[in-house]
Length: 168
Ligand code: S3P
Image (tube, rainbow, N blue to C red; front, side, top):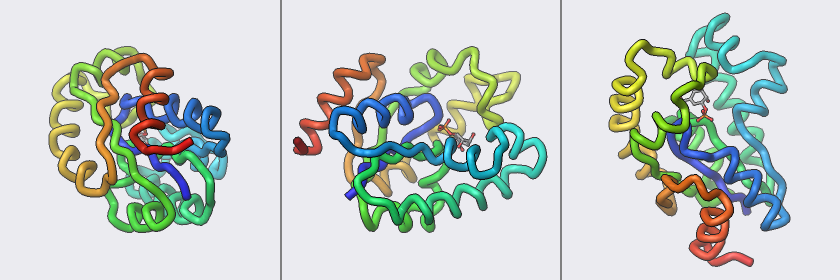
């Protein structure tokens, strides 16, 4: 079985996935990193050169391939699980954990970030707020568990989540 971390940009999926993999002696894969390695392009370059549609195709292909793996902690991209095809690819062999964060948390963590094309707006607060509110019900619908991820204490979050999932 796999553990799949879902949630908005800046919810801490990648950092938490790495630590969980270490603690649980499982392997780790990040869907964005997987796409970048396979295409030899940064996510922002894929958006710039080919558009969001092409990125979503690559993401769906990656979710399919990664869904075949076992004993992995999988960090999704913030948009991966908005597509039910990707949910199906990943959920059949895994538990989906939704990392729930507020708009304030996202803004605090990503204030200086320029690597997320969807947030490169002159009004970042508005972009985060609109996108997050629209996505919340979709994230929740695919999740097996929702987990408050507003704390920056990754060690504590990993330990709490391990307890919640009742593993180890
Ligand atoms: C996206 C989130 C990003 C990346 C891409 C699109 C989204 O991943 O996949 O920029 O639609 O929310 P992170 O959530 O890891 O930043």
